[in-house]
Image (cartoon, rainbow, N blue to C red; front, side, top):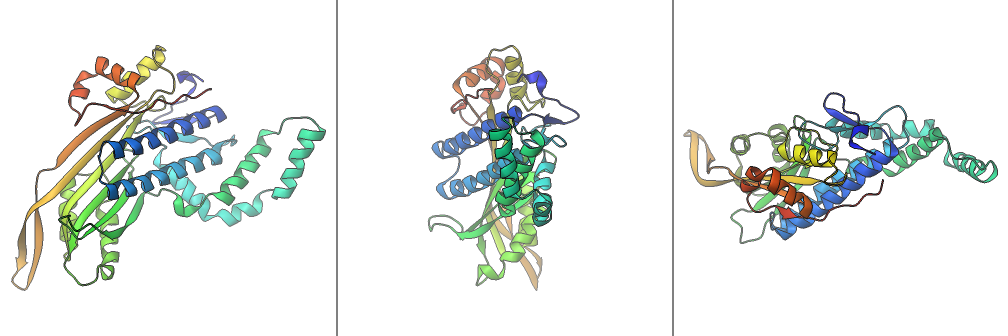
Length: 352
């Protein structure tokens, strides 16, 4: 498989062969696992955030694996990888998964029974000594897909985490997390909010909190604007810190955006200076904290609001050693703007 075998209509690359599905899944799975280890090692997140970070990454990997099973032998539809500034599956692929599983029972009734399919496979392989037809393999993969994939674990456009108490040495009482797949960027973001609660029982107010977050914090925007909007819409919540992690782009052979890191990797793959499975991960962390409070409103209807400090931004690049050397040579200006030197992670070897 070469770079020229990947079709790229409009803003999506179409995975149109079993080899490409296997290749892409192995790369993304490996890259995410390396990312989790690096985030922990470099202390980009604290221990509580890391636990939640891993859970959201697991949801993403589960969904991408479900896509691999769904499309593996499908001659009619193909999975699309976003090209704009992502390297991840197009957002619509997640919607297709969710919609499919809504109709799980209806689809299963239309599929060939498992026992019948097994008999056909054994007859074809043992008696006729012939390979299984691709259409039959697609039926088998569809059965696996609809019987094993759980809709509950599919990464949706907005995923809400629980409200949790935080350790006593933190300047807040509670923390909640959420993740969203920004449609304009086609990549995931993970957020944390530390806050105090001006009430008796946080469970009495959690539905209000969840609804506001889903309404106003489900897309990429200025972080201080997001924090201010949450603060205004939830009078009993006193946000103290909001943190957002931008996952991506995942720079690899399937991502043909105009990012300099992606362009450098693609150019070097094309010249056969680095292997086809070469990749790098960009990671951006934005944080904003409350520096003081003020009251706003009439005498009988005052609300305590936060005065937010400037947004603190940190950029990271994670890549194997060979790619780090390449980026230092070709994009030194990007390397100089990072929060710390590029973080070395392992490379992946994929046999085509």
